[in-house]
Image 1: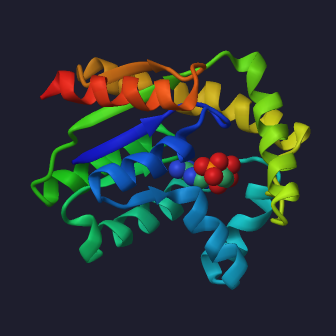
Image 2: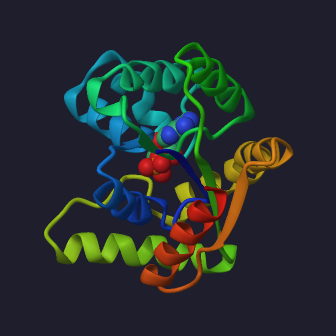
Amino acid sequence: MRLILLGPPGAGKGTQAERLMKKHGIPQLSTGDMLRAAVKAGTPVGLKAKALMDAGSLVPDDVVVGIIADRLNEDDAHNGFILDGFPRTVAQAEALDKMLAQKDMALDGIVELKVDETALLARIEKRARETVAAGGTVRADDNAEAFKKRLQDYRAMTAPVSAYYASHGALKAVDGMAAIDSVSQAIDEALSAKA
Ligand code: AMP
């Protein structure tokens, strides 16, 4: 199964992607996680991405498209994957279409988590508090200022990605404000409705 999870920062994409990964035995491909790993490892990509990520800005399309192209070539992605945080621009969505066409692969589902934007900052702040309580390190972009920029970019650059997939007739919307289990169930239903 090849899936895309769309939705603004704090919508719960990562949480749902993890659940789908366990349920379907396919990897979660999070460009945010891959970029954070590159920053930590100090790779050339990481060095290029760090300041942009810390400020809540998007990393250039060619960088993330390159990361995904490499990742899709790995063995574990052959049976399916869940894209979390990619594509974030229409150019990325078009690049993904080309990559998949070259591999003779099609997407099985594109699910958008719909959320009330006024609740998102509180969710991000809660995630930061929980991370601290668990002894972890808070993401450099989980703060009010970077969040504002992330939301602005989401509206300007990523919302059109939903329109792009809706125009291809493949987009399913799910209420992301519901409890985590209910959201998972709604995603399952949306995916099986397609089959
Ligand atoms: P995330 O973990 O998905 O919230 O991503 C964290 C940050 O990584 C974003 O705010 C961007 O700076 C960068 N990033 C992740 N995915 C992408 C993408 N598809 N396009 C551009 N930048 C991205």
